[in-house]
Length: 176
Image 1 (cartoon, rainbow, N blue to C red):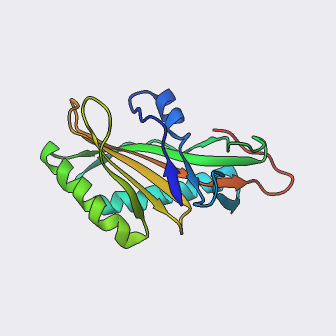
Image 2 (spheres, one colour; image 1 turned 30 degrees about the vertical axis):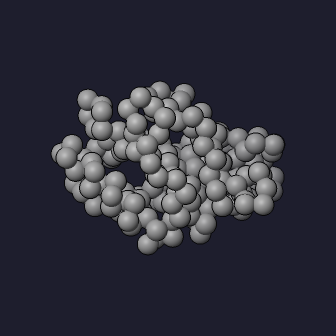
């Protein structure tokens, strides 16, 4: 499985929607990974639980934003029957000096919890934010983490995205 990322932007909610254009893909094809059958609400709850697991791996004191998961279309699928879930959130360490430790903890701990790091290093922004991209085959999820040190309030910006779900027979995707 590999995540394909579009340009990463963080500041605007619209940019987060653009980010979730990244998709988990099978190595053999460019099709979005099929996760299974679920309602939008259950899939969102499941991805938020995955986010909570990542929060636990950060290992430094701080606060997380309280963003909720959202639903978006799966490429080349009927928007009424197929969907992906994305969950953007931020982590603000209690001290800006803890940001490096938080990112290092994630780099070391994610692989021990089923995540495969597929990219690590500076992005192409003028700030050269350090980016970590990882996939979890068991969770059928990918995560994009950016360490943003050159902000008024330094933070980790995280966005998780699922593979493509199909709603149960006779139901439609609940978009939120």
